[in-house]
Length: 368
Image (cartoon, rainbow, N blue to C red; front, side, top):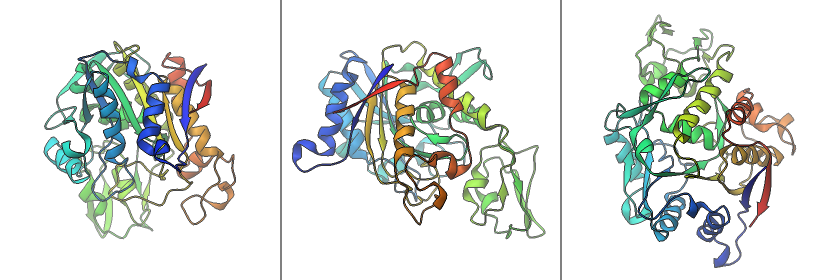
């Protein structure tokens, strides 16, 4: 059983403000022990897609930077480029988006480094020999960093159902080639009765697999890479994701990427997860839907499986917010809100991660 530390978001005095809560959790979870003086410490976060607004505020990462620096570490903020076409496809656009969202030295007091380089090709290949992946392709900055602190925004996700620390670490640090490998089980089809022929899906398709012909979108299955961008961007809900037969496989691939990243970093990884603005989708679309539950709090742990299990349990324990994507039958506390949002069983990732020895689903929740 692992320890997961929790702080709520109540604050009636300065000592209980968000920066001080982060500091208390950092100390309680002994995250200052996952790196040594002089270590290069990668703080993995998400800089937010342009148009979205529920990504984690840069001030949260800034406090982690401060705590790492006080302990003698050399922190930098990092993420890998995206597979889809958007504001973070290459390092130039990615850094520009990060700066516009406040991830600049005067705010975060640390450099921002794109983990897989200018065009997403700067990766290291780590041999894992697991169920789906023989090797994993990870942004080189993640591999060469001495330690990693994963700062995650907990939210929903169309492929994994649940996006927490494992999604942030595994998918997030995968290079563009790695992300492609993790996405290749998504098989979209166009629902012709719903398609308006607007061409938005074609515009956002990174592999140019979609064209509008006869006022309907057409997907070339030979060119489709299964990234799910068409499903996310279609305003008319005209993309059928299929039977999601690859959902469990996709989750397991992400876990295998976590496994590869964590090799050689035993005792050198820490996790902080924020259960705030729990939206139906991740922070990659160029919009943010209304959160489906009230803000809950912050978690910290050295166990990636326990922190995700605790986050999921806390989300499902909340009462849902009416008028959101969450249907009325799932508003009551204890209902599986995570599965209800995207019709995805989110548990396989936790089960497989535990099987691979990445952590334990059994945890003790300790309030600080």
